[in-house]
Length: 262
Picture 1: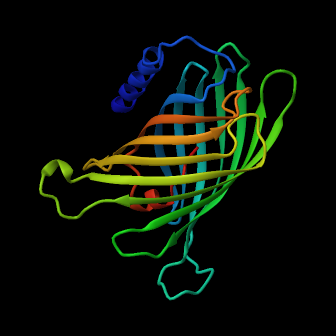
Picture 2 (picture 1 turned 60 degrees about the horizontal axis):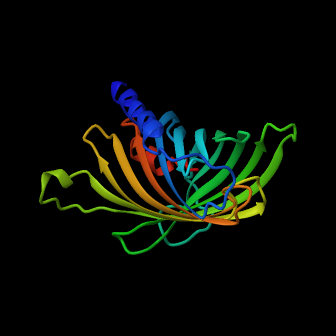
């Protein structure tokens, strides 16, 4: 528990001092830099069900907003074949339903609160044995309130993510024993426009390390191409450094089922 508080203190220090530029409001921000941090843990419910939770913080520079989020997802492992292919395991690995609360603290502008509902499923595409391509399809309902007596605005979005993890079994140096390389590519399809952050393309190469006690740390270097990060611009390029921490209580089954992503 002390480790968790230490990490959170470091993140808050970075958020206060790491981006010291003047704040700007709704300008043509075509290129920006962001820092994301999230802590992830799982609560087992049964052999085939668990509840995964993500608590996160995000900061953007030039100073436009700080974002705080909490997302919980109920995950169901699939044990039945929907389509009877020759492979032994079901194509669809798991189903997911969840909800998230996202608060955006804007500089010199009204804040934004979002309630997000989530439904999705994960499936695999059979490939060569060393590489498994994981696929995730997710539908989101986004309800946003900008605190301007304008009420709630609804937006709907479809997401598709393709990911894999590269690792090796032969270790010639001791420090490489827990090392792996996660790679993700994701597209966001806007079905009904929300106030901010609509269609998006995200590329996320990373580097991960697993400790002997099963704690995991992942560092991603992410590129986003997104629409209307402010009210005035059309598109922007986002360069993101993301640190993810996974609680050691997440076993192999939990990792396969857990899909808390924003």
